[in-house]
Length: 306
Image (cartoon, rainbow, N blue to C red; front, side):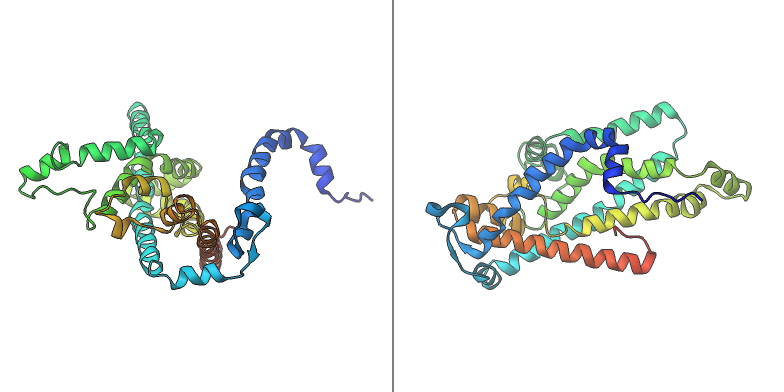
């Protein structure tokens, strides 16, 4: 009688050592840059003292968490962060799905490749260059968009300096930059659809819209749910670089978010313990949202991260 040998972690390492060697650099980088710095979390619970380093300082418990929650900035920061994140998810999340479905309908291979390359390119533009382009294009005096608005009789409106237009400009520019790149994963999911499903749908007389609705969208649902869970898990971690570069004194009431505030408090004002507490608060909220959304997705669709 053959008795199967129970596979152990050591046996897995021995059998697939080539694969483990390939991902070893990535494991080391993640450990060095993501796990070792977690030691600094203790600063959120200490009164940081320069003379004692990261391990020193008086233990103050939840003092800085309470200080942040009771501060006059708390409500505005949370409101701005959630507003920008929700707008990005509500408007930006469906965009790559729609683009992937449209690209998948193109039968001309050369045209399809040209379109894909065109929509991928903005992803490789740096944030600094992108914000520079926005400043040039949206300038009310010299920008193309600014001159066009003036020609249409809308007045000299500085879209980057208005509290009413900052979020739309941020969201739309973010979609333009990343929609093509984010559509790749959906195109990969569509490529795995069994061709027999398309043939069956055509035999049954289905038109393009019916094929999209009954064949392609169901194939994308697992990918959509997983990516939605990941996006909801970072809803309070709005991108720092772009918002910080787009900030000016006129749009600050709607552009000041938790991450830019942490930078100003921690780096500029040198309140390291207070900044660490705010950053940890941000992370804990994101983690709680990730667990909650993952639980809901598992109960509703039986699809989840774990």
